[in-house]
Length: 325
Image (cartoon, rainbow, N blue to C red; front, side, top):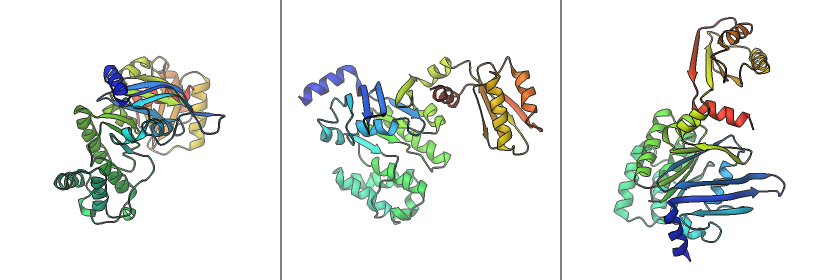
């Protein structure tokens, strides 16, 4: 039976398949609501969405941690419900929540090497490589619970990469890491995917998804709302523009909320938000209505340092998709 399943999967070329997947924890509301998607072998697939969108629940189903309420799933040709052990032997999982042994950094890696029956010399070589890659060499003798949040996350990812796998599930893997380390890890994952490893990746850093993912799905309220390559999604929402207004001084939050309401009520923008001293106004008709938008903005912003109008980014697509659900 297992061989038949794997033969079917090799024909489709998919490492992950979900069909009409539903998960309800209370029998009333669906955390995952009838989603269908597939991930090709060797593909990096991004699953994006706000907290509570259903991403982590989907990963828990695929990695055999919980059962779906209905629908069908297969990972590498196996059903997570019927063949959990066959799947666990061939996947890696980095969960969003902390998960580590309370021994030292070094011993965490050694424990994983033992669990995965990696030969001693090979395990030693891999450990040294990962300690250097994740900049954990200086804390190799430190107990895991004494590490900073970012170091704990690095250890969590490094530990999983001790063994070979066919599918890697990454749920918010770079939280707490600096940009240089995040890019280093992403490049390592891309290299592994180029060698045939399949990756299902969730993140709130949308520039990461833009950089690493072959295809992206955006979830909201348990459903997949859009799916495609980053280029396809940006093209679909190509009418979006973002106007960035930077001020020399901080702006009172109540004034920004008033401006946001005025822009949306007048149909000049879909959203407006403040990031530091920069106000970001997102909309489809910004180019044509630029003069009117600036006139309105000056009613609430006394001093303007700079103005920048740019094309849509994946962040803009995400905001447009999620806010319209």
